[in-house]
Image 1 (spheres, one colour):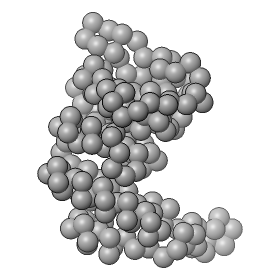
Image 2: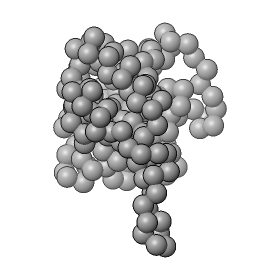
Image 3: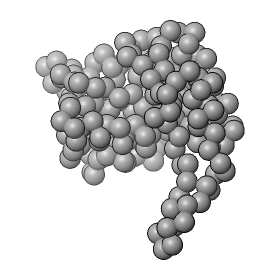
Length: 190
């Protein structure tokens, strides 16, 4: 989610019209990252209107529809899939250069729904240095390959931390395996 939000912000700062669909229905975090005191989405003549962040990013998330953002969304696959389809089809996104879709890790119903229901240019995989994260990314990559969705690249998050006092770099989660993982996916390391 952090990577999705930062990618959307970077594209917006470059002058592009950007939307961000939070498809992590049971763990939505995009509104917390991009919006202060967000209003509920409103209906318009062409569909649901997304909430626009201060940076100009159009956002849709289940958390924007809940009375309490801490309320759990306890839904099974069909409801999750239906919500994601509605966020794509029934939201009036307007003219966008990019629609970033934030997904939960792995090969869940949310990922399958997005890969089968939304026309995608490609997927950016996000990993961390732990081998377990690499295994999950390989599974998601396999899923994308089976559904013929191109992998645009791999990003390694939480690679290291830099001490603000001495400037030393610490590999908090272990050494990076990103180059090897990207090579195994046949994708560039971004």
